[in-house]
Length: 321
Length: 254
Image (cartoon, rainbow over all chains, first blue to last red; front, top):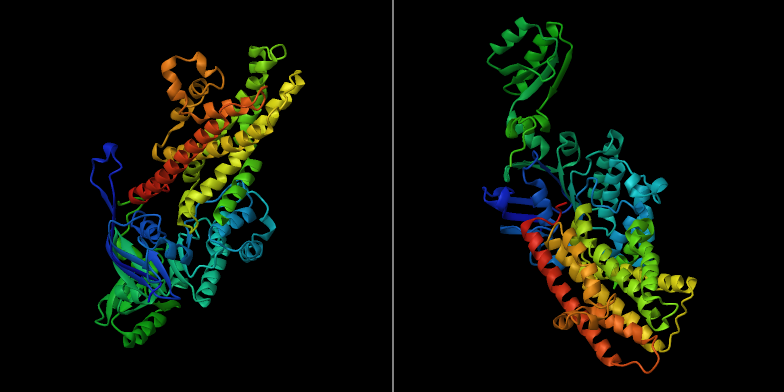
């Protein structure tokens, strides 16, 4: 049994134009996805890709048009009572909390809704406030919190009932780098506790660091599911060298070599990316570079961000729906 | 029961932190004064209970209409409806708890109106405590059930504020809490009797009148039936509304 099993899931939304006469928007177009027990799985995609729609269906607040979705074997449409206690949803953002109430009061309320016994509520709330660094602000109104603090409170709320599956919809949006790093540590702890996590994010570094597998989704369709490293290998089956200060003549000479597949400038304009056919080709190319006085060198495979940009494309600010 | 208690506690905490939601209570002394002046209550003691009960029922209805009626829609706007629906607790129980807290707070209007009356020399004597206690309980229950119907309807009709506004003063007149039903056109009487406030007003007034209270069982039965109808209607509406917004995907729309 998997923590999450999605099969042929479809969901469209009526057109938001006047009278709904326009073309319906397809949010999910027959997707299949599994998240294993204890797995941390990232869902990566641009705005409007269908990530949040999938989370909402799994959280039982949205009904799919077709297909099935199961959480720990329970159908999210027909077995609501069984599914809901198993999942913790973190939709995040500025909304979703009672701003006029304190952080502690919010947690007590949400814990009660999940049936946490009264005698345990206060202890659990205090523990989570401590875990998320909010103890000093526990009795302050949430409306005075920064976005990052609200985000941490959302996470604490999602854990109040000790769920086995966590759905985190862009959980680090608005967090400062230190909090985001702490969040990654937390995800590691949650995995250690045997919980399964489905995480939607735009943060490639986050996905690369904390996830066992990542799924790239766009236009309601899944492009690829693999480990972050495997996804990197999709783009480059070859090793790659990043070098700074490569003379133009040397770059041309490298291009002419049969064991070099490509030589091009990096995104920052100062580095040169050299891809070679196999691991054996690394040593001679590196030697050539060092002999030419190039000493800032690194070998690597493409990061998840590059995979994302290559597979989904660079659309600038455009939202494709 | 946990969900009911959680809703009750949440709403009590929200009301403590948002006294503006109880602005209606601030209007009670003014309405009491106006009605006392209109009825010349110090010199016509028979009308004094009417002048005290009317602003009480007006305040109860207004809190039901504007505060309790709004709470699901306001949760949707705040983004708290989605996580509430995603929780195992039944939304109906949570809403019932929250509406109960609002209704209980609305009862403060009775004490307010009574106190204002005393300040202006109007002394009410409770001649029949049982109808008074039963009247308050039955009125509170029916108010809560009616508020639940409004709360569910407002989720369906987004931007329902104009409807809410139109349900205040016309209803006070229709229900006979400001002008006796006998003064209304005859053909309106049956309609008035469909408004629970008309039965509440009769029941509460009878507690202050000399002579044995008349029609107590009928009044209680009418209130009970209207409460049951409201509860059933709210239950069906809430289920349908939830099913509809889960299908349409509008649960989280602000």
